Length: 466
Ligand code: UDX
Ligand code: ADP
Picture 1 (cartoon, rainbow, N blue to C red):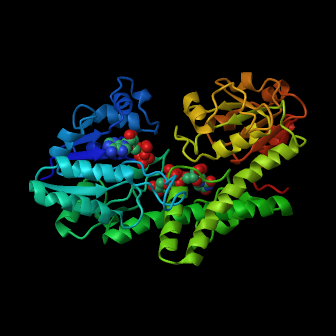
Picture 2 (cartoon, rainbow, N blue to C red):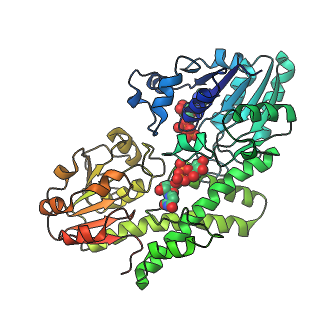
Picture 3 (cartoon, protein in one colour):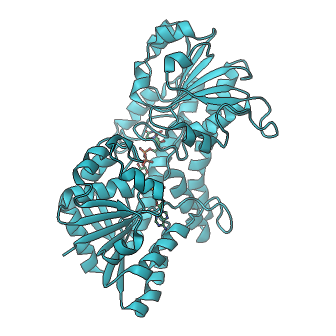
């Protein structure tokens, strides 16, 4: 009988996943631990709209379960000690130095967790890898755990249970998953984890595989999804050159059931903490095994994404007469997609840096991302001139709360994130406030072209060659 679960890592994966487990398994105590004191304080906030992670539906679940069978704390020792199952949900950023720099994942946090589990666990503990990890990481976790096994009589089993939730729809994805993947070689441990998920997931959606297939399936799923986005964005560029329309092309190809209609929206390029990292992991793996053509194939998905983001910055500069110096540009959205406050790998970061490098006065709006996060991502404090050694002109950025106030005297508006509020903007009102000639760039296809054009604004949208 499983009584206690401990999850190490109270982030975008650990927080929502454990909330949904707690909500569906009232007889299990779920303890989410993190070594970040501020983050845990934020999870324990009285105001449920101020949790550290914005995710629709999350606040209600935390409100229902917190203090009953869902707990957030910094006490790793005690919670690992009493856990029957430990989930590892820590971040695995791409390595910045050493072997595999720029491609392989930095596993230092995962390794640290394995060492903490090895040190504190008592009795038999099932260790579940939840973080997205390179293939064969379970082996590293196992060897750390096995090294301590003989020392303090504790025993371990390692399972891979990759997360497929997408941010912004995480709660729905967790409650109604298309599949739950559990990889491992100990049938008893697999059955225990199966049993937990079967409290709310139909049994036919719980897939059991060997541990390596499970790890590789996660990387492959993300690589395939990202590949679709690079594919559609590359065709978008052809549409713009030829007079075709990417929305029409997407609809036409997506109605072929072999292709399917999802993940065919052209945009500013994929972001998020997973896609790029997972593809680079795959590239590293292929290179490691001497599969150069395989590595090149997947690497091109990332190269197209980088090229595509720069293409947008260049296009804006060109439309604004080749220079952004002294020009006011409003960026709508900074998160990597709508309904999240996450900015990791957001297209907004690279595009902002390009526009600032051209000397733009960039006014950034986002309903959920805070200005400190933007300053951190751009590496430039708000309202400060850029380092002239890096940037040729005096670009500056400002955070704005009121869109209509911000657009006064602006030369261009750029939609980066598909937040619903942006599709409800009053373009007639905006047009009267902007400096002419003024441009609206819609990288997400969320605006109605006629409405923007009728207001006297120049309009560009992604993949529209008409
Ligand atoms: C992804 C996977 O979908 C999820 O299964 C995995 O667990 C984690 O990685 P996430 O990164 O949260 O989830 O969001 P996702 O919806 O996949 O979007 C990723 C990026 O692709 C975003 O920048 C999004 O805007 C972009 N995108 C998505 C497009 O540009 N076009 C599309 O059609 C879909
Ligand atoms: P993800 O999107 O994978 O959930 P996040 O960065 O949102 O990534 O969350 C990962 C969390 O893991 C962070 O809150 C971080 O403080 C925490 N973390 C990383 N290493 C450890 C560790 N060794 N012990 C406890 N918590 C850790």
